[in-house]
Image (cartoon, rainbow over all chains, first blue to last red):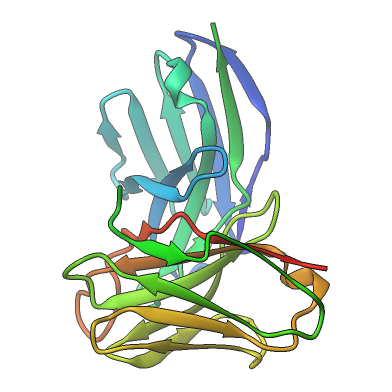
Length: 110
Length: 117
């Protein structure tokens, strides 16, 4: 079983829509969580860290539920430029490795 | 751009050959890690280097090895190439908090795309 599981999608949404991605992690020792974004044939880039209390960055909101070992990313008012693959990431507190999910593909259409 | 550069960008090898991939880390970053990303998959951690020592390793066989140099640049070497080694190899640098633990924000290069025939 993969340490980080995501629905691969694709999610096809119209501009302006709200879309949510979910992710589960299996290792209860995971302490740090992130969402990375990867454009087609490009390198992953950090979108945002995920904090226990939930956090927001503009149109993006991340939530963490430690009891359920579940992470989410909400994108409001989707833009065409949001089209990308969103990678859910978990890491043990003293670890070095980032454990990436397979990614969820988002396509925002006009 | 992240400031992390990798070379070569693309290469084709045959089974059994050896390959060396190179990475220059972003200025000020002393930790370098390598990830393998197969088509349709997320990146998988190979190993991390801090102060020229490997300080973390994923589930990859010993034929995957690396080096970090005093200027924090790094190499990934893969011996006895197999078809399944075909993938995008990503180098990432980051500053470390302490003892080589990275902050979780990795700055990736654009990768070296390896095809093994």
